[in-house]
Length: 160
Image (cartoon, rainbow, N blue to C red; front, side, top):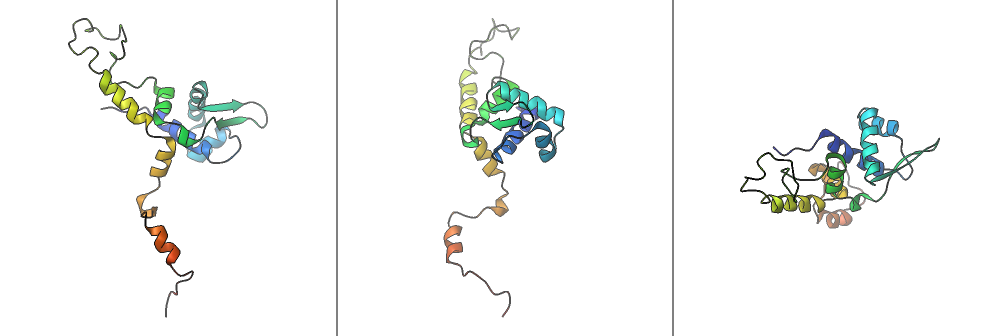
């Protein structure tokens, strides 16, 4: 099964939290808001800072902020920041020395198109897309609902 680490999942939550608000946010503040232990949030923020997804500032008014809006952050960047390069197998893109059967394997290099397709698919989805998808369907209006709502009377009597 292909599965991302919990830290990558937490990183997405942290980044979405950072998008709410204009100022900097602290690691303890983020942890309290999203219910993830502060040491874990600090670890995630450190990795995200190293990869340039967030910036940090020190001092009494210090904290973390996004380097770009959620619509400009592909999911692939978050995965790579936390879990490393996106690949299904170790023998990808000319990597050497990761497989004991590398010299005899008839599939060497054959996974490259699969890995490229997965990376492309993940690069096409942004954190803004994920944030939008997180709104339960019950609370979403159909595309034509806005027209119906604008045509509705301002007040609707509850009883006659």
